[in-house]
Image 1 (spheres, rainbow, N blue to C red):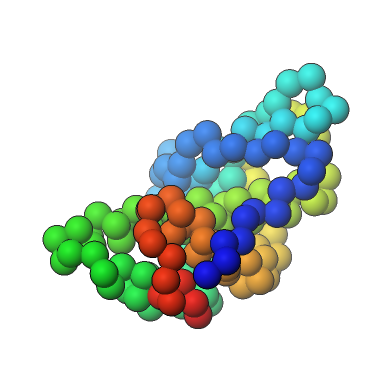
Image 2 (cartoon, rainbow, N blue to C red):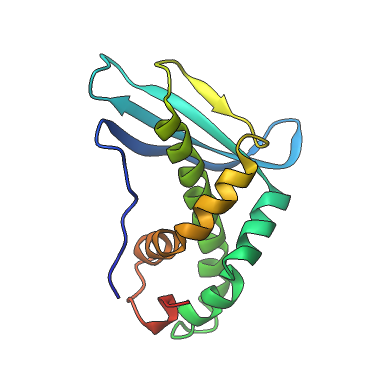
Length: 154
């Protein structure tokens, strides 16, 4: 299986800082914070990308994440699967937030710390996640140190 890497606009360097983490005062809403540095900027910024559980559930269903994950973890011992499943779900949220951040970068972003609210670009995020399913799966397989196999296929 060929791994697909996140298409990062060349003028930006993006790294995950923290997340997903619960958003204070907003039950069922999570965020990932990314450090973003544009080549022409003297310093970087932080972008807090929020998403709610209903979006996560809908996107997970759209890309058949649960079935794919069962197949991806087939070769693991039964006692290891729960921890891998939990971590894979966290990685799924990270990847979705990364897709949302990429939309912001493509549309233009100012050099100031900012938050992308959970209701920002809902339809566009859904389209992006659907079209970048291979990136999401590759990201999860890589982060979990799983051996690439047919389970990564749709």
